[in-house]
Length: 318
Image 1 (tube, rainbow, N blue to C red):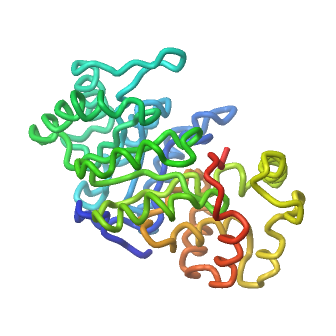
Image 2 (cartoon, rainbow, N blue to C red; image 1 turned 30 degrees about the vertical axis):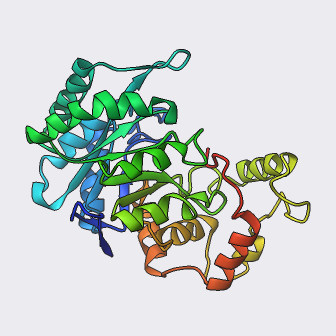
């Protein structure tokens, strides 16, 4: 396993991180749900494989509590745990949450994770319209929790399913109050390479790459649908084959699958610290690690990917 420094936090994190959300949510969305002892064995197994970065959130069903119980038997100084605090509630009429709600959320996360301190607390905000609420009022509350020793480092996620152009992060990161950014970036939406990652490199901000694979690179039917949508919106030319837009990439004998290509592409993009995976199958975790060990894609492949998709900033993944 390769390890990288998570920006100016100084934390040493594995190139592949373990996420507890997405479709799986540590097996809770399976029918029937995966027994918790099996998930504990999975999490202990990925730690043994070298993964030391674990990400969760209060909104991932019971993932925080499951992760907390699983990590209890692992050495605390050898794992890095990130979770989130939502600073805005409501979809139809979103409003900024109060100081009491922020404090309560963080306290509950600490209890569920069975930790005295959260390594990385990622603020969760739907869009840039809440910038003033966050940095005029709410950030002071979070910094107070940091001063109290309940949070080591503060970062931010983004609303990846809708903010494909990273408007929130582009406003938030220049404040220099955030040490980590969770960024949606993959082979189709490469826009972070032109905006977020250069900013992070300049300011020594660590990054956690998400939406690396999700449905679009795992499910050929979904990939076909996404490419068709992008073509109908004028983002792709007619010569991009809906049925096999990456067949040319898979013709390379050194690229075994589209999932492998997606991980290798993201992991070796300048500015990326760690790529997150959410699989609950030990064999797939091992495959993902083996994929990363193969190193970056061929430069000619990266060039062709940029030429075909480099202008797209739509939310891609699900």
